[in-house]
Amino acid sequence: MDLLVVGSGLIGTSIGLALRGQLDVALHDPSAASLEVALGRGAGRRWDGQEAFAHCLVAAPPSAVAGVLASLPTGGTFSHVASVQRAVQASLEEAGVDVTTVCGSHPMAGKEQSGPAAATAELFVGRPWVLCPSASTSAAALEAVRAVAVACGAEPLVMTAEEHDAAVALVSHLPQVAASAVAAVLGGTGGSLDLAGPGLQDTTRIAGSNPALWVEVLRQNAAAVAPLVRELSAELAGAADALDRGDLDAVEQLLRRGNDGRGRVPRKRGEHDRDFVPVSVSVPDEPGQLAGVLVSAAQAGINVEDVRVEHLPGRPTGVIELLVHLDAQAEARRALAAAGWEVVRA
Picture 1 (tube, one colour):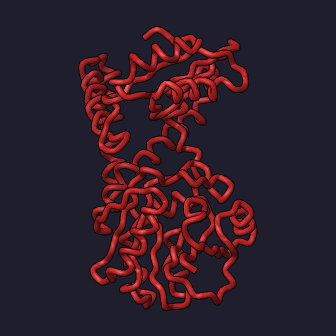
Picture 2: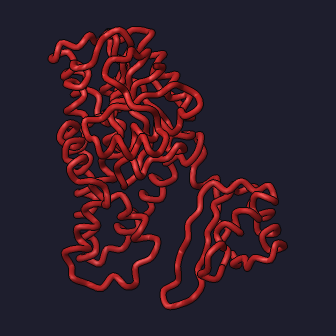
């Protein structure tokens, strides 16, 4: 077949769904239950353990990648999607795998949910897919995984394993630790969370991720993550000391540095939050309202970059916030109001 995917969790199943109709994909997983769900969702067909493949992508935990690759028949090219790369490259060499046939990779996409039931064909669309060839990786292996990434709708980006691990420590692993720490404080205070809104939900969303998976990721990238956690800890300790002293100037400086940092985070194809603005619509808390607002925006030719729904506690209404490009804000507000929606005044 064109592609064998070993591992039918969130990533492996999403790859199969994304490639449906493009490539002949077979699936394999030691977990019969996960495999059956992925097959039932149409992510591919069952591998019989014998059929040859042009390329094999291993979607397994980092510590399992070398063992899986060492157990597979040779003849094709291979890749994996481990969230850390240096340790996996070293383990492949130690396991005696022919590293010329292997190219590490990591799609920068995921969810706080895991497993094949959470998979979606759109998971990788527009997202970076990092390719991490070693010094020994063949051109054929690199191009094979690049082709998979492109077919899934991702944007391939070549980096060394060291560059990758340093980058994901900052943009992925540190946020996970920070979100978990905030959520841990919530669990330990015993205070009421009845007033919680989108801010707290957004901040702690990824704290719902699988702890077992993250323990392995953080263990294998600890050298890159630990200094960042210490830097975050120093910022928080400084804020606490400033609050104790009543030094609100120091607190304001932290908040302004936060503004600056947030402004550096790209949202889409190099564009940043400063390039987008919200348009809010008040709606009854009834079925079909979100779909209706999105249809009206589409009919007006408004490209909606993101959506957030805020439910108002104790009230039968909510607010749908559409994120649109700055240049489209006025037209979006006008078009939605003309369609009969209650646009919240800016």
